Image (cartoon, rainbow, N blue to C red; front, side):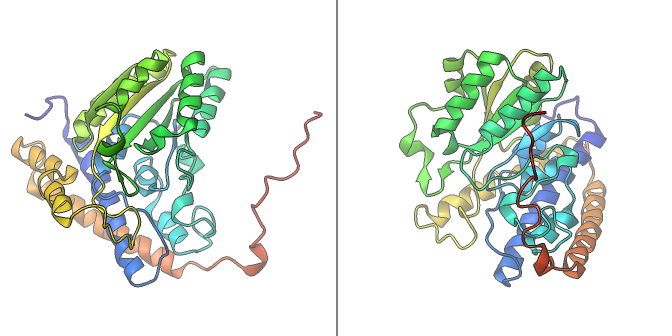
Length: 329
């Protein structure tokens, strides 16, 4: 049964964001096959997590991402055209074409960056939350990470510090069942990673990560809690990675039947589309109109990326360093 509090504009926003992410990833996969873009880690199957969480954030709030960061970037409000331009290696990209897939960032919308280091976002998000507290702000930081990263030392260091200082940060674990080639079930010590929150004296919640409304509602409570100054929390979203760990991954560690079973019966976008249509929150005409708008957005974005210039050779060393920093002032 559909949540009665879901309005038509909210449903349009949630569906549009998930479809925008899916289209972006499918386009990247196609362009990689044509050797137009380089290596990438796709977010297909996990769209409900970024969409549900970011629907509760303002432009001023912060997020940190992972090596699988396209979805978080787009859900936080980054532009499709500049994201494509970055993957095309063009100077109009978010990192002027020098960072590629794993270094998308848009500070103007609070996206502090994707990260090629597993667990690399923990301390960045925690630092952003510390800065918010020091200036008595109301912003919240969200750290997206995978089940594999939850076993790294930076996870403990960051969460322990945030809990001790009651920092406004929510750690969102995208438990997509696979840490690269390692199945989560083979290395777990608990059924739900959110249970680990008890060790830090903070709330821990696990939800169906393929249900965008469940993610939205659970994250809303934890984000509001952080915004009130009540400290950090852990949200585990149980989902599934449909594509390989990276484009070109032979996936010998799992069967294609397993992937197809999940994709057919637990696709987050199809689940939401069916619910909003059955409950008459949206009509098929509404869905078709969303798709038409996305058609134009992606046509324009790809044209922008294709026609943008490559960085000039003499710009190779620009933006490598932050510049001189004086510590005696």
